[in-house]
Amino acid sequence: MPRIAVLPGDGIGQEIIPEALKVLKVVLSQSQKEFTFQEYAIGGTAIDKFGKALPEDTLKACQEADAVLLGAIGGPKWDTLPAMERPELGALLPLRKELNLFANIRPIKIIPALLSASTLKEEIVKNVDLVVLRELTGGLYFGEKGRTTEPAAAYDVLVYTEEEVRRIVELGFQTAQGRKKKLCSVDKANVLESSRFWREITEDVAKKYPDVELTHMYVDNAAMQLVRYPEQFDVIVTENMFGDILTDLASMLAGSIGMLSSASMAGKKGMYEPAHGSAPDIAGQNKANPLATILSAAMMLRYTFGLNEEATRIEKAVIKVLDQGYRTADLAKSTEKVTGTKEMGDAVVTALS
Image 1 (cartoon, one colour):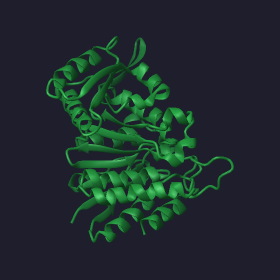
Image 2: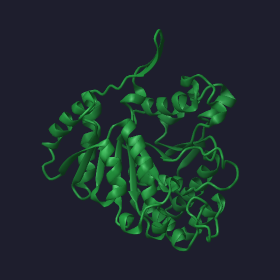
Image 3: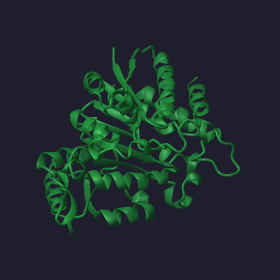
Image 4: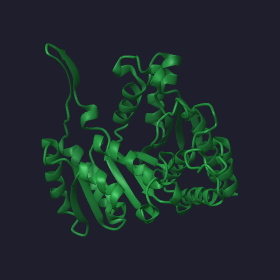
């Protein structure tokens, strides 16, 4: 029986994960499939309970599970801890590294009912349908870090190996082959040696995929183009920090970061989580948008378990409730009724029925 390690984490993670589980259990029961779900502590919650952001039991469970479903971690409560003990550096990055989750996949596709929710003009976003592949276990976030006293300075080292670049770029080309056969590699090769290295390897990998149109774009231009003419993009592949920034920017094309699902993959093994943070300012108030987490659960069914029909049913149910006018606070106009976290989850369950 497939095993899912469930990590609600901190803040709104405690509210959105139950809604995703509710939806998952309904769609699986409809298909007469059985999964086991076991919850574990991570992040600030784990620090409070066990004194460590990534307890050994949690790591072991994630290593042994078929997939991981994560809510969100972090918050100001733990910001005064030493950097490497905080939820992000003490749990999230080590978990990605330990599970070798080198590829973060974030699809961004406009849902017609949310055209007016985007901060951009409708004619700019109406045809948006793109995927960003972000390298997730190398680069600046995982390089050597430190400080010196004389003179006072701080440093973060950006290192990429050929293997790290090649495997994410290969996945980018393979993803593009299944879509519109267009791949844009984003770097900063006019300034950074690591980006020139990235571009050289990308050009070499491209020789194996003559059917895919490869373009290169500097990251600053890519940010501008995402808000100027986003429908030009099909698949974007980029390094860790650039991908972190660009995907948050791109989330607004779809109306809210509360709609942005993601999968962090190593082969079929994946950790699935919404792209947003723990939002401590609204935690415990039944205000959070659970749809990104629900859509992440759909990605889990599709990518790890090959349950495409079940994943599609969830995605269609989300579209249906939005068509019916359900809106959490991040999506609602001033004149629209706001739906709570639990009520939105209930609406998706009803739509599945």
